[in-house]
Image (tube, rainbow, N blue to C red; front, side, top):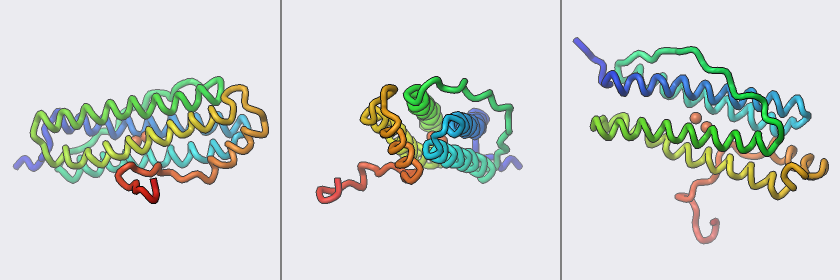
Length: 183
Ligand SMILES: [Fe+2]
Ligand SMILES: [Fe+2]
């Protein structure tokens, strides 16, 4: 008896996304190594933590496909992008990577809607919300660097930025939790 509750198209899309999240993990690991090598240990720490989060996302896709009776397939992971030339390029690259990932997530939501696979649609809503957070985090990085002076930032302001990122939380607050007293 076929107990697979996923259509072949959805199973493949989810399996591909499992691999895509590992690619994101490698990308942030690679950027983290670049930052560490440049002496930005706080930024590196932030990126290493983020790499771990992306791996966790990959595991969620793996577990979901298995739970629904499918079998995810581990594929070759493309090489991470080349090292950025500047911190601005590094943070812009992170933002772009998150937006690309959001596009991939939306495609799966779209597919689940077309197929009326409400279980997958429901599962994917966690990722829709997570991507809002991840994009906000990346936007915050860009904003902080801009305030510090961008590529013309002084060593002192970069020192402070680097230090603040070491301690910065992994999650950005969601608008849904905002109140008048705590916007
Ligand atoms: Fe992710
Ligand atoms: Fe992400």
